[in-house]
Amino acid sequence: MSKQEEQYTRSAERWSETQYADAESYLRHRADLVVSLGPKLRPRDRVLDLACGDGGLGVFLREHGLEYRGVDTTPAMVEEARQKGIAVELGDLNDYAPPEPVEATTCFRAIYYARDRPAFFRHAAGYTTSKLVFDLNPRQYRVEDVRRDLHAAGLTRVELRPFFAPQNLGLPTPAAAALYLAERSGPLARLALRFRFSYLVAASR
Image 1 (cartoon, helix red, strand yellow):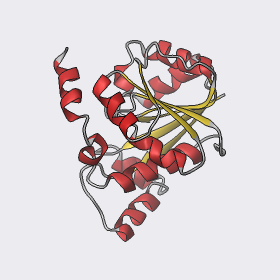
Image 2 (tube, rainbow, N blue to C red):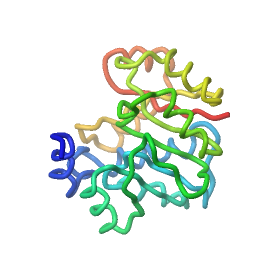
Image 3 (cartoon, rainbow, N blue to C red):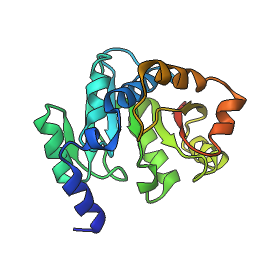
Image 4 (tube, rainbow, N blue to C red):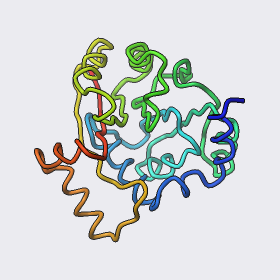
């Protein structure tokens, strides 16, 4: 077992609760944008969540009436999710393919696990009928490069939305609402992304 696998195994219990200062607010906001960014998802659409951890996002996607399936490489994470009643399977995002096509595929805090990013996009596009949604740190990856790789995979409609939910800081509801509103502030939001936060990307055909 690698050091990374050991870390995830040790952290599997209460993963979502310990990774986010306000897990409910953070994951609910993420789920809302998974539904609304790009082609809108509708009740009973299927979502495949790659590198899903304990499947915490699934709780909030199911509130939208979506069918959720998670995939993670760490057995302890899979077991933790199943104990919570969340459908998660063991698998690697580079190779896993669902038994039938899904409307949406998501991949959060994990795009850097793709061994070959263009190949990963092609693979995911092959079983995704509506959109691929993932987060992107513009200080780590050039948006133009990622957009080029998505286009090469046939995902030519690319929408980006700043995602300002703080991971390590819990905020009062009014402050969180103001921060989410700031995601739509255009140039100011793009300026903030030079220093922190990330984009949510929805790529479709």
